[in-house]
Image 1 (cartoon, rainbow, N blue to C red):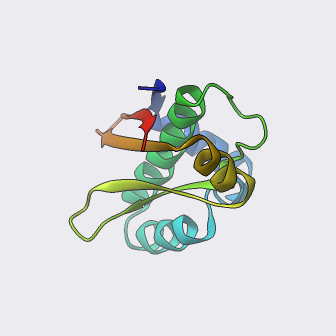
Image 2: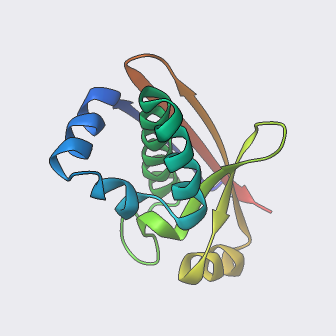
Image 3: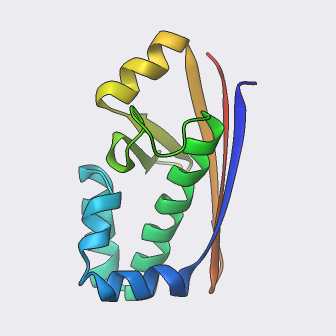
Length: 129
């Protein structure tokens, strides 16, 4: 095991930030594939869309802790996306400098997410591939 990261987020905090930034926070945090899913969910059901945004934020925070960088290059909000397999299982998709950085080290991350009405949580474990 290389590292483990955990993050817990109160949904109302992100909702307040979303309102204050007039929604711009979503495009700063989410990669293009995530943003498409977020928009569709948010348009269908605002609460489910906000939970999606929050789980992705928490997962990126947890991932940044697991790799030991925090939000410092090559780690950026949009350089890792949390997507779902057809089964619903979440997985990490890296891009740009972060993809190269992870590949050079032979590291792979695994993520699990959970959400309730008021809170979301994410855990990431990084291992050698």
